[in-house]
Length: 221
Image 1 (cartoon, rainbow, N blue to C red):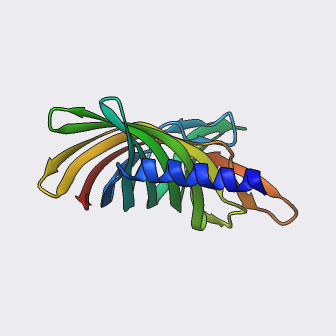
Image 2: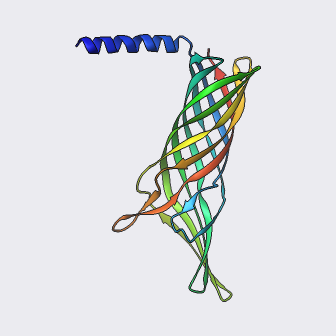
Image 3: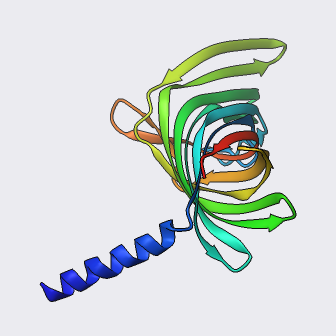
């Protein structure tokens, strides 16, 4: 019991010290996603980059000063639109082409370090990300051989969410109570997106994307 009381007291002291230096920003973000690094499951497919987008909200909490900067915590909730890849391969005299995409709700918890440079704030960050697929994986598949082509569309239910990581660097410029800026980041999933089959789940792709975002936030304190 004494250990519990001591631990609770220590946690309370640490929390009060940390949040005595807290700064709070709430904002919005939006930008483009370059699906560079997304791989379809079939290793023989030569994948090309496709373009998507993201839009969402975030909070930025400067937790405690450390030297010239401040440790920060940045939770994000955003929609990633048109995750996917485009690929080509040859098989038995046919040229195959597939373009796959899906949407997701991504929840990230980023840990960063705010570095003041004049009036600017440089913000490197990294953290885990949960990707919750929205709707189905949509694919457009083409077959070409001897001057003939066949096209058809396909939709696949998604079996589960993905877990990954984002890392990158941002910049913020204060304009009164507002913070305007942007960031560039790379995100990758650790597990493959899986489709639901008749008998079992099967791998579809592993997501990787470069994001370029514009951000705007209001600073409360």
